[in-house]
Length: 424
Ligand code: NIG
Ligand code: FE
Image 1 (cartoon, rainbow, N blue to C red):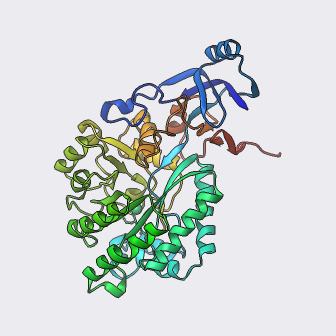
Image 2 (image 1 turned 45 degrees about the horizontal axis):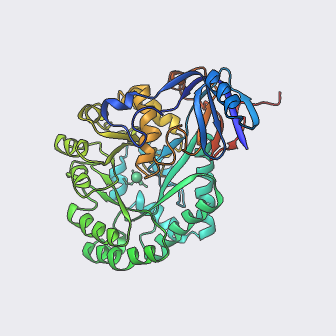
Image 3 (image 1 turned 120 degrees about the vertical axis):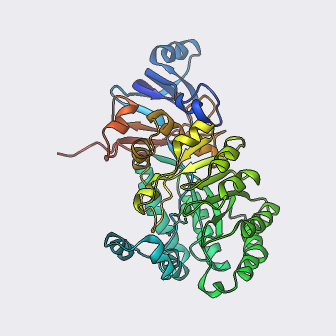
């Protein structure tokens, strides 16, 4: 069942160079093929020029079931959004309207709103309600080109509630074609019941939540919000030690509100990814550059809560493996649109188009331990890609604020179809 897409005006494969992740200068290499072609079933069989593909079809007597002409189109790997909180209940549009009138995100959190607002609604939600809420955002993310996504719990902060969120993510894994990774984040905030007894809540995470999550095999990762006013390095370390014993890998929310040394700590403990990094220190950046960790930045968060952007140029110059993600959540970044994230990255974090594409595809996959199977268009990897209705990948950035996705293919199947068709 081979499909052959030919005459692709701009095919960005990221297929030459390191197949697993790119750091520093290597992020500039996206391997663009003009008049490209791709042959695939569930996995990619061949990428190259149309001429080379036609030769190969004859030589190897490949049986092509479907041929698609992609003249005037661009193909890039599907977006790998490695940081989201899309399974939640409730509505924080009132808080957003207040922020527009001048109240800050921090002030709302200190009043007991913010994460705790979503917590109250999420605790009350049924499994089915959470599945439907997550599905709506996941489908929308796919329309904008996302093919792999990480989803966290962390809006219940009770054992049963966290399990409920993670079971909803498990259900999404069953129902959707997306590549999905799940993360347990009981350490997203301290629930009001434990506000004056943090130690007891950390104990609950370690002794009750983590074993229960592991028992049902609900999480690939454990995450904690390590920041001023949230979890300390010591608390995070204890939680992560327990999570590792149960086979979970580690990822962190690091230095989003202030520099607490969380990014460097994350590199030291072998975390897969340190995320946010708005205030990451030079020392932490050097530690990240010297380790295998992915430094994940989420410019839509800085934009949405009016914070300074993370120092992307500094990290790339230092040689970090940089990824871009949406952080889609109801408080600090309510967008599932990775094209918007790319726009913000090139203009406000001064990343190049090529670096941004690498960060949102191959390096995002690496941040989910998925880059052996997806994130670039190379033989043997899954056929996960976007057909964009533009002549060149540069146009995705140049013509900004619109959805360029025409089609999305995941594991060789056309999941999102012809978004540019009208019945006029
Ligand atoms: O990643 N930083 C912590 N958590 C989320 C915000 C969650 C919320 O406001 O609901 C974030 O930005
Ligand atoms: Fe987050």
